[in-house]
Image 1 (cartoon, one colour):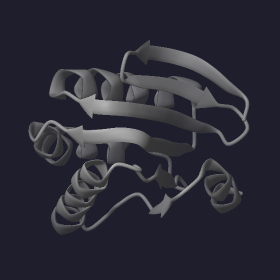
Image 2 (image 1 turned 120 degrees about the horizontal axis):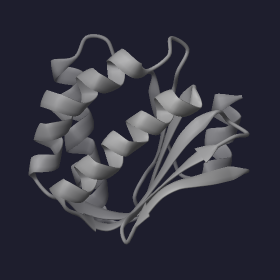
Image 3 (image 1 turned 90 degrees about the horizontal axis):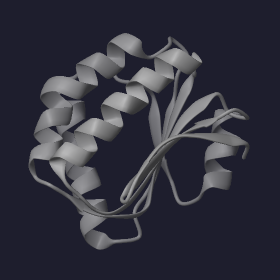
Image 4 (image 1 turned 45 degrees about the vertical axis):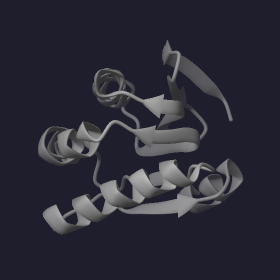
Length: 136
């Protein structure tokens, strides 16, 4: 993967994956609400700026997220994401190894599918190589 680092904090890095025309977000550890908001809004700006097509959310090393994260995603972020995302976009999610991380990821997805009729096509993966095959 050829990537350009765009933003980095202790628990997140946002990059542009030039090979896959994707914004790549790598999370690790426990994620607090303000950190999450900041990183995701910057990622959305980079998505538009770079004219990216896809999203790759790597949560391999992520643990749980602050409970308010899911609420913010449902109410504020996802509508903005839908507006900005290109027509043929896909969202690939690499699942967390941590059981609490998988649980919070599952809760977020269930909330999104209940609230939104239209969603960005997404799929869960165990590795980045699986993501690349799906995006190709």
